[in-house]
Length: 489
Image 1: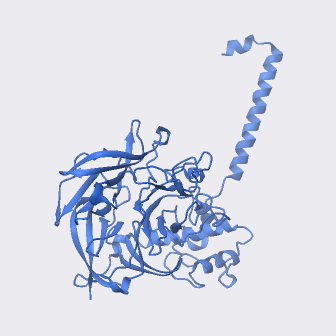
Image 2: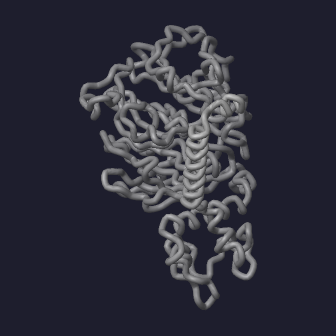
Image 3: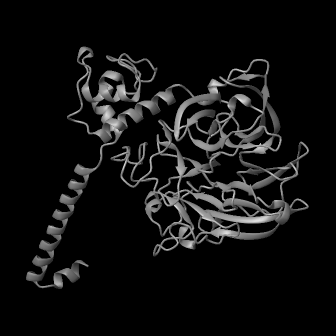
């Protein structure tokens, strides 16, 4: 190459050298600009402005610890934000309202909450006290009865009209419990992708199962070169074999990627027989706002996969007709309220797990607005924007919310009218008291008994829960169990 360069005339050589010099100068200026504009993470802000007094791990020093739930000036979100913005002159804490913007201040609050939860220890170390086998919550005492503990990482439960229970196991097995006995895995289930969030997901029974025998499954389907994507199928079970399989929805090849998280998938049929299903953003947050993409959405279809003509974007050029709502990160819980409205849980980033009321055609904001920390270590610039829905409630930090269930039965009389949500990361079952569209009270019914992946009401009127082993990680495959909550007077 050197000899070729020498062969070029001197004026041409000087022109090439000058062009390269200018290009390198422009590149260095651009790199410096990018570095100057790169966002400072919340952890960097804390290290720079807060750790000198509160300690590098918030353990305390010249000022108090931030992880022991002891607050001189109040520990509510508003009080902590006030302390950061206004300072506490009598304690020697300066005001940061002129040096930190609202986004950065809110990020510090989220970081404090997250660090405090981590400092408190794993949820499994705080198991719910059980007295003579009885768990006493505020309004209802009950016992946990084990239906089976011979399963691995249960994901979902469904009941057939004859009382048989269906269980999906993350590694790719569909199991049946018949008259208290766990049967061998159903043969013929498709191969599933089980890395990170992948696996066999929800199971749902057709409302007219007695007439048609359809059972619906969702799973992460593998492709060559370590790619996968969510796929929805239906089939029937005959002699413990999966038969008559039909594909209800499968993504185009371009959506099968090596990203192994945020697959969704939760099913629910409404009273009119429409099937709703959720798809997470599959690691591409921007797709949640793109109506030409299926990810980051809740979809509504007929039971055979056809698109209802009254869906909100059927006539929108380029939009996918199956979309019911958009702007979602990863919804993993559905339940209909007594008035027929659909409620959904949604995984946020670090902080920002949500419960939403799902309304036709609405935009739920992800990733434009959120109550959590984003991948860059900062929260979104704002938590609200015109045209984007606000959650009914949200949590900071994220408890790992998954299933949701409205209860209006008679077996647990003191729980009638309440909403129950299961937490995976915090290993909790929570009871929410709801008035209209507002959550006015929360109670941790139990904690530390395992990741709560599903909640369903059985034909006997009792709660059935799918639990992973206490302390298990989200992406791990481990022993799990199905338990029944039996009320005790």
